[in-house]
Image (tube, rainbow, N blue to C red):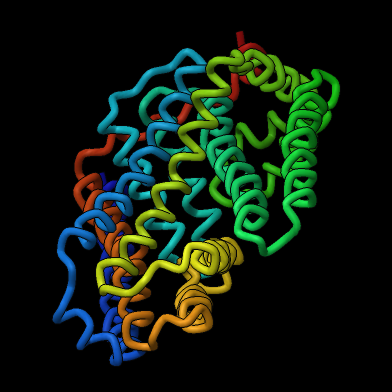
Length: 351
C-alpha cells in the first residue's frame, strides 16, 4: 500500500512538471510570434477548424495503427484504451527532455502489458508503428520533393524505390529465424542492465539467455502480416503524414496567406526532422525557426508566416501534448496494476 502511495505521488509530480513545462513554453512561443497577433484578429475560422481536425486526426490514426498491429498478433484492445495509451505516449515523447522518446516507448509497452498483452507483442507493435511511420515519411517526402521540383524526379523515384526495396529486404533478413534469435540473444543480455528489472528474471536471462531468445524469436516469427494487412497498415501510417501536412497548409490558409505548397513541404520536413533529432522536446525552437524561415523565404509576409507557425505548432504540439497529459492524470487512478510474472523459463526450471 505504501509503495502504491508513493507511485501515485510520483505520477502527480510528473504531471505537474509536464504541464508546468508546457505553460512555461506558451508565453515564449507567443512572444516570438508577436508580429502574428494582428493576423489572428482576422482569422478565417473555417480553415482554422480544418487545421484543428487535420492536426488531431493523425494521432488518432497512429493509435489505430497500434491497434491493428496488435490484431496481427491475435490480441485486441478497446479503441479508447489504445488511443489513451497513444495520446500519453505522444505527450511523453514531445515534452520530456532528453529521454522523452525512450520513455514514451517504455510507457506504451508497460501499459500494454498491464492490459494482458505479452511482452514480445507489446514491444513489436510499439516499435513497428514507429518504424513504419518513419519509412512512409521518408518515401513520401522524397517523392514530394521530386514532384515539387526541389530534386530531379528521376532521382526521387530511385531513392523512394531504394527505401522501399531496402525496407522489404531488411524485414526479410531481420525476421529470418537465425538472425532474429541472435539479435534477441544480444538484446536479452543487454536487458540485464536496465534499472528496475526483476532480479530473479535478470538472473534467469543470464543463465538461460539462449532459451529466452528462442522463446521470443518463436513468438515474433508468428507476427507476419498478410499482404492485405501490410497495405492497410501502410495506408494508416501514410495518412497520418498527409493529414499533418494538410493541418499545416490549413494553418497558413487560416491567416489569409497564399499556400506555397512546394516550400511548405520543405518546411514540414524540417519540422519533422527537428522533432526526430530530440535536441529539445518536440523540436521546440528549432522546428518553429525552420518553418518560419521556409515560409518567409517563399514570399509569405513575416506576420502571416509567424501566425501560421503559431497556429500549427499550438495544435499539433502543445495542444496534443496537453491532451495526453490530461489522459495521464486521469489514468493515475484508473490504470490496472502491473502484476509481474517471472520469466517462463524460471517457472519451467522450478516445476
